[in-house]
Image 1 (cartoon, rainbow, N blue to C red):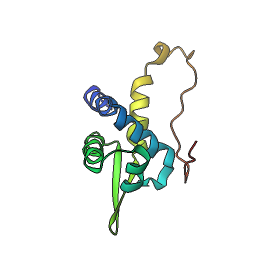
Image 2 (cartoon, one colour):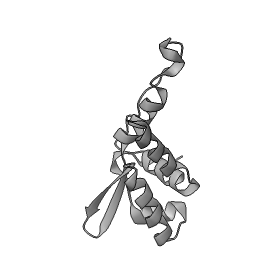
Image 3 (cartoon, rainbow, N blue to C red):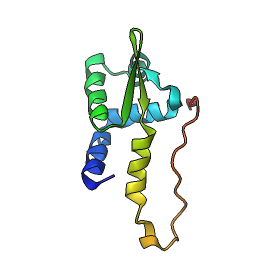
Image 4 (cartoon, rainbow, N blue to C red):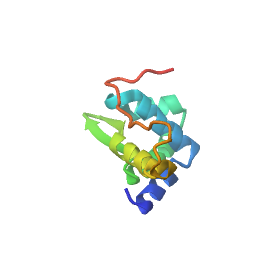
Length: 113
């Protein structure tokens, strides 16, 4: 990941609703959520959620899949992990004294806490 991509990704997450939506999708695991279910969880109007999802799509943080009349949205773990790697690639100047960093390995189905 380069600096411009990292900045765009961070900017997309820099809004409370988008951050909450992305975290819900990460928690949902690889199955993701139907847009309607995500809207219900967030309590956001449909048009507002669409605008936020468009921002997350533009930053490659979410992936859509149409299932009949339903659109399922999933977190793009590769992009998320790329951002984490970018942010931590020079951790402690390579001295090895940093806390261990591991990439997210999504479960088949996330658990709601």
